[in-house]
Length: 319
Image (cartoon, rainbow, N blue to C red; front, side):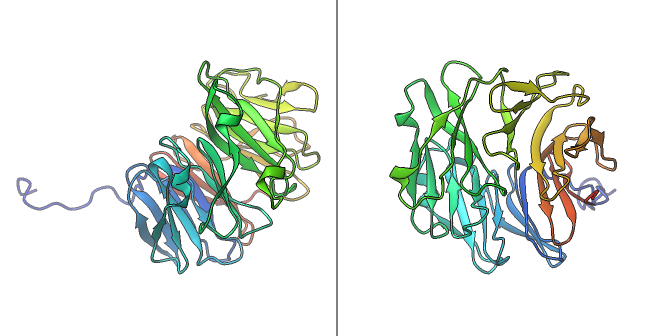
C-alpha cells in the first residue's frame, strides 16, 4: 500500500507447493516428507515445517521403523540422508546411475535396510545408502531402451518388483519384473519382460495384485475415457478404467487390508474403489489440481495427497 516499499502476505495460507512425491511416517503424529519443483525437500514434523534441501525434489523416504531416518532427493540422482530428521547430508551413491531429471527412490517393504534408485542402471543399497550395487543394467536389455524410469515394490509380495523401461523409439514403456529382488547376490536376480502394453503413453503408477504377484495394474497419465487403467490377469490386459472419465491420472496406491481399496490421484481429485466395488467414487474436499502422489499413514488412519500447485492435503481413510 506504500508503492512497493513494504509487503505483507495475501495468500491466506493457500499452500502453493508444486509437489512431485510424498512419503509419511507410520506414527500417530502425522509426519510428512515431500519433494517439490524448485523447492527440494520439505518436512512436516511435530506440527512444524522444515526445509531439507534445494533443487527439484522427487521421491522421498521416511524409515518405517525409525522416523528419524529419512531420504530426500533432487534432480539427476541427488540423494540426501538424515538420521536425526533435521540435518541432511548428500550421499553420492545414487549418482552411479544416470537418472535424467527425475529421481525415483523407495525402500524395501520388509527389509528396511535396503533402498533402491533407478536410472540407466537400477541400483540397490543394502546399508541405507552407504554402498550401492547394480541389479539391472539397461545395457543388458538392448540398444532400443535407455532408462529404467520407475520401479514398484509390493507390500504383499516382498520379492516382487515391477520396472518401467523407456524406449528410444516410441512412448510405450516396457514392463520388466522379478520375483526375487531381495536375493543377496544381484547376479541371481531373475528378470523377465512382460507382454507389450496395449496403450501408448506414460505409465504413472503400477500395483501388484495382493492376491497374485503375477497379476498387476498399470495406470497411464492420459485423458482418454478408456485405456487409462489396465489389469494384467495373467494372460491378457483388461481395461479397468470404468467411470474415471477424462481425468488426467497421475498416481496410484493400494491400501493394505481385506478391502484392498485402491486410490487414484487425478486432476479431478482422488478416486477410490474397493475390491468388491464396480465403480470408482470421487472423494471430496480437494482443490482442482493434479494429485501427483499418494501415501497412507496406517497408524494415524490418514490418506495423504501431494498436489502439483496446492501443497499437501490429508483425510481420514474411508475404511
